[in-house]
Image 1 (tube, one colour):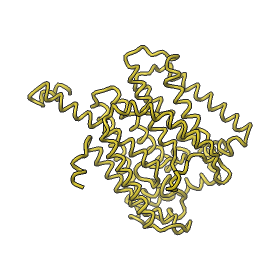
Image 2: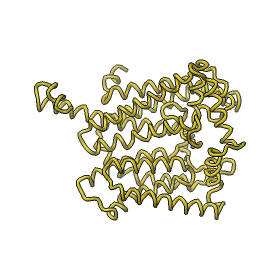
Image 3: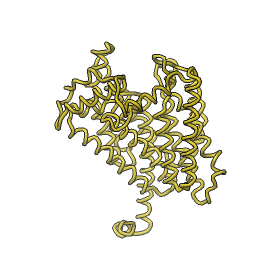
Image 4: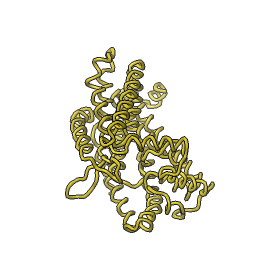
Length: 399
């Protein structure tokens, strides 16, 4: 074990905040799992705790393994990953899985092990790496929109189209994050505005097609519309029921909360251990706990920006931001849904919520960021050794 700790590379502050979030996750997951045990009548709280521990253990194994890979290797890996991701997304969508009559083609089941895998999570990470690679490749060129359609926007379009029918919120987040990364990478704003308008047009066509042919994607568009309508005009629906229970949990938590494991609303709130776990955290640990958790994510954002800024290469900068910003964005959306600042989306709270593939893909992204930070630390050390015998002179010059 000591040998493992000695081999931890990269940004130590990032390691610390990720480890603290992972350790803290055991408390709300163990507490909220009683909803599945006593209400649904399945499993035991200890069983869910062990399952969460196993998933988290493998997640940190992913972080450790990935952070040892040199950051520039991900350029080539993204080229290999994109075709695989597109095939997996197409296969997932083609399954036509339905839950209560609604299209839920988000997961594929891995044979022999009985684990379901949400391919859109892998697609998100792979696509952000691919976009970072392309933006690095054209950084010194005059960007021509026509030349970027096939190598950049076609893969983005295919990924979004294959995710959209089953998971609008994830598709929207990926599209937004790609636009943000392109903006940070220097892609012309006038072209990005054109892409946004094209995206709105394609979404409109999709909605009209789905409404005209209801059997094509059962109930998905109706679900999106109902969630938005319920957000503006609350009605007696399942989505509104979840929000009301979440607000009750937050309101009864008060300033300091009821205490660990003492949540009442976990027994009534669906998805209390995943999508609405933030409401349970506030109920048990109060506004103080809720704000502290938010500060942890903001500190995580700060470290991501520091790591990106400290990278010696454009690819390293864009890579860290590309895979890191979606983690923070997803966390803020999850919290916003719990306090009814955003319609229900089904997004989990990164590193906290129970679940397999979502947490593992978050760990994959964190491993990549640590890989970039490891390279940045090495570069900084080499610069100091080569350029000056006095490190303070070099640091003061950089500042």
